Image (cartoon, rainbow, N blue to C red):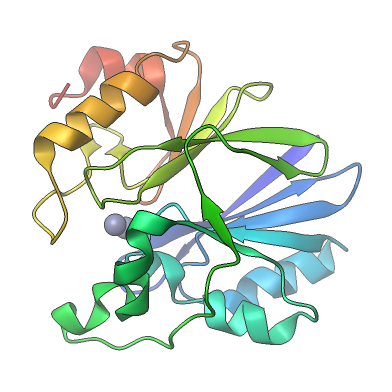
Length: 209
Ligand SMILES: [Zn+2]
Ligand SMILES: [Zn+2]
């Protein structure tokens, strides 16, 4: 069974996901939003081994816990990011723009590309490049479990902001249409903020689509 734990963390209540395969006890952290130690403590409690840290994009509220995780595990689990978000990542994810500061994270080990396949235990996830909110935003799609970790691309009844540097409304809508609305209605969408939703619900009720 794939077990998904959601932690709303940090100043803008960003969803960090701890996702574990209960059979193999391997787990991945998707968007270590703020408190890396809290995510690791829960993994330890469940006897899960962290085999990767996957970023949907490099905004500061999704990456701030990466440094603490890198420090705590030896050898550190590989960190995955799309190259187009690397400049943002290296600028503390834009934190200074908001008058904030976060601890800079380690350099990513894995430069993600569209169509790449990643594993959590025995579960396969497909990387889909979905720019618009940021240039290097990706989502992680698991066909077998019918779910997508979709970061700040789409939310229940809303879509990601496109008024930050590198954002584009037209590109975001294209990304959603090509990569999310093509999925079956029952596919669950686990967003970077707020509650989960489904492709079918957003197709029917999202006012931006
Ligand atoms: Zn964002
Ligand atoms: Zn966010």
